[in-house]
Image 1 (cartoon, helix red, strand yellow):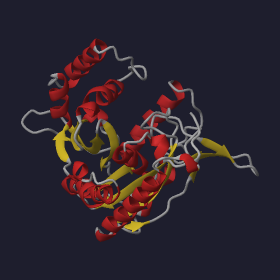
Image 2 (cartoon, rainbow, N blue to C red):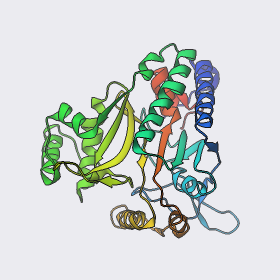
Image 3 (cartoon, rainbow, N blue to C red):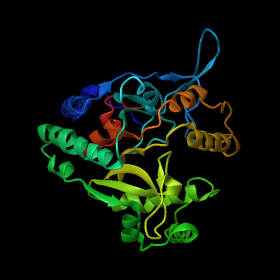
Image 4 (cartoon, rainbow, N blue to C red):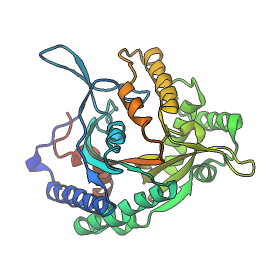
Length: 330
């Protein structure tokens, strides 16, 4: 990755102005919704629940291993005991392969709203685009209209439009595999379960079909990402109350109505811990027992979302994400 001195950055002034404008507007919008900004820890004692690796560091005094946060959601859920609506704008650190839309360290919004419905959550995401992203883009780049006109579509409708696939259950998995093979797409990870297949069809078919800013709703149960699963009506398949926003084929936010209590979380986190150990060869897969204990004190519907601010800055400004980081990763 080449280094770009700040002094030679052709768009540095606008990028700094846009990110400052956007974060100010996000904070203003969320405060109007009754939310409080609460900083969460960067160093964490256990791995987070996702089936991926994390950056680690070692205490120079004790030698203890610490994990650098992948996101703030689990800790924000715990602190929502004190206040129903909380958020943080801060840095996330991911063990991602760097690309035009992926970085290791980047700015993210994470929010947790308790006693919130799925529909309320979708409206909240839409409001972030219409009340924060759009106006900030107008102020600095003059292109806010492209982000204000965000649409909402169900996952299966987008898949059918993009691929012609309208099947469910085992047929959906088989049809997705055939489509991926026909388009010469190599699996990103071994197809151990249906989850890996649908992750690939999401990345290579559903997201690229979202050329307009789109909120994707009603995901298949296999892609629940610890979101609540509801039974379909009139013989329709179950769906997850997950909501992602995608712009020009790039995911900008993800969240939904999350599991209530620790039972379902524990099952997913145990499965993902086993995946990390057996498939990724990672150790240190202890479960976050304090997180589970706090979850069991809250049984109301909770909506969360994480939004990549640097990724949005890249899309609005027409830059590679490495350029909007100001100090690119090398």
